[in-house]
Image 1 (cartoon, rainbow, N blue to C red):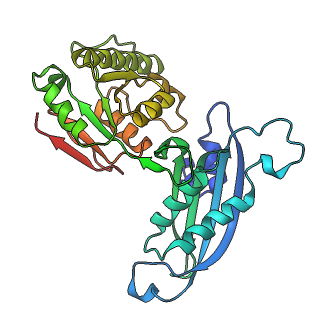
Image 2 (image 1 turned 60 degrees about the vertical axis):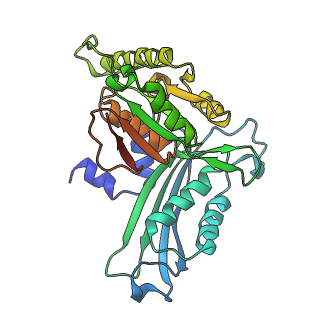
Image 3 (image 1 turned 90 degrees about the vertical axis):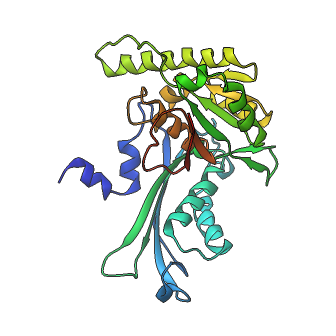
Length: 305
């Protein structure tokens, strides 16, 4: 059995450890928490409770020092069980995937939580356990307009512009259409024309490609005064709240990410899709003669070149 296969069936605690960054975070876990719920898409499941088993691991910020043995200074285990109970009580659901997403989002609303692994299994649907497991990070949660409870979530449109679209005479018209939708817009670009230096080493090439994309971001910004180049999640959040149209300079966010893009960053469309998923975008718009990626959690639309 390969290590990948072993991890696929391992407890979320082991999966969190295997994917931890060089400076790993503290973790808290909830193991084998079993509750009964009416859930399921099939008719024979409706009106019948069945057992669900939850395993949850949360990576948390370092606790403030000193702790003083004060429970109010930590993320309590009760918050994990309360998140499960609250989502089960909110409404009847068909899918474990939906339940896992909502539990993860509720946990990530806690200030200390940075990344969460949620595994949910049905124990009464057959001789074995049937389930799902998801991993979500704080960056995947939508920005909210205002700090008060119940503040409106901001779901941007992420738009990828090819080099041809950047240079096209109708660039301003494209941006007009994006702006007229009334939602935050994040523009992304790829590598510039002419290629970039090649090192033959993945880590150094990754940095060179990211810097080249950032140079191209400044080219786009020079073509329309509405475009503001930003490099950090804080800058993106601020710009979205204040209605600015931003162009993403990816180096810092990509290099700092715990769950960064898996492929080469030179694949600009895949990089744009990764950002769209991190920002809980409503959609990814592709402007130019590029292919739409497969397997996206965010709807992808093509705009005529």
